[in-house]
Length: 188
Length: 204
Image 1: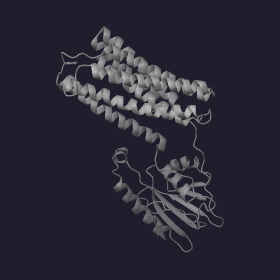
Image 2: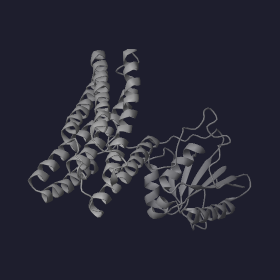
Image 3: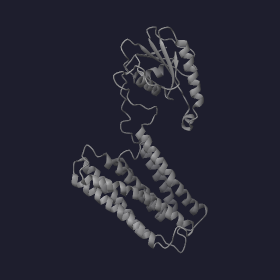
Image 4: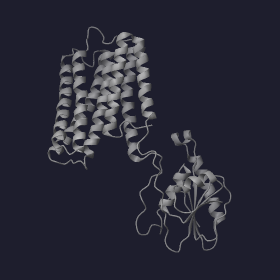
């Protein structure tokens, strides 16, 4: 939905729409009270429809792809796994592994902030995977990500950087990440 | 092995420069801020409108309660003044975008003067309307709704005063006029709220 107060020009247009709506309501109410009520409902619905239907400026543009360079001599693999994943396989060339488990929550849970259980599940999964991926000479770190997997990858790339991304068993998510990252993305 | 539940600063990633600022949210901070502002204003005015509709619809209080009368015509003239001030505000911003300094200054000055006229006229009507907030539910709601809006106009006028002074000091240019843009958004918002208040309090 478009924000009617995003800019002065848009808020001015919103004001004009409200004035037109007000004139229609007053005119209809002058003829008949219930006609005024109907006009009010239609005017409010019309303005909401207009704000909802009008495209948000810049919304259609693809976000810039993230370049996530790491220091020379490092081959950092970013592993993205859903809660409950018990094992993943990571390329032997990795010198560092960052495991990110998004704390996926339902819309209601996200809106009410009741995400503690989801975060706890994600933390458990992250700890299990970190344990499983630990081997000599490889530094492993694990963390809970945002409630949107693509956003969680965004965060991890900006915070840690990566040379390769391994997605645990989700081809659709891997495809979405390919559109955001410049590094190779594979499904493991 | 190191296990973390939250993101920690990278130890040796991005060694040449700090990582780009980022936020784990689906809404950008500026949009979220505006939504929170609109939400808080809707709740604030909504509380007063709820009281208004309760008094009129549920309690069945006559509006206006006899023997009082509402100054509908003066309020209409005031509405026209406030709506016109939005047009001059828009003119001011369009002028600064085109490098028209006279348009910017004249637009802001006219907007300020019209806003001031609105507020002074409203104050004058308060002194002549013949009832006080203590005179029943009708009078209380009338003063609360129009007074709450008047407080918003006062804030808008304060912003406009600074904008006008800055315009006359040459602080704004076609490239840098964010101060006019933000003040303009607020002023139009105040106008929209007045139209709603005017329609419910004076017309309905």
